[in-house]
Length: 179
Picture 1: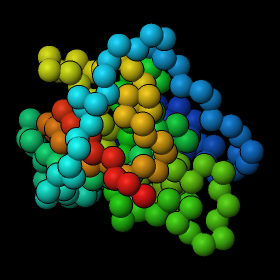
Picture 2: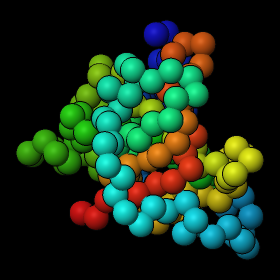
Picture 3: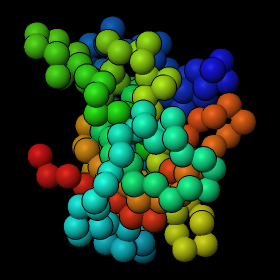
């Protein structure tokens, strides 16, 4: 568990430490791995919503390393849920409330879930969009998939577990739910 918390803190850089207390802060523009992207995002976008999508918490509890999974969640979990220049991001279980889901909460970055930090370690997963060889796509996920913070996505891929039990999904396809 301690390793997971350290992983979340490193992944978020300072997201959990800053949280809602940094009003008026701006999100930096994504850094592109290569400014002339030649990767066609449509080959990673699913045109139909997959059946039998399972929430993040349930997949974390049940999936073993290498299992095929279909997982649903919202992009977020930290101040910066992206890995800049890569098609990777964190998702949060739909049962967890973003700050924007709480009436009267005016958090400038509701996707950081700063009001739910106690539940985040067991409610998040990292998604990495990978090519046919299993290599992470080197185009920012926002550009590749047209997603933003708090987008709801359904991801098809393989579960990958580390020694601490953290869940990464090596995505072969992503469906972006319409709002």
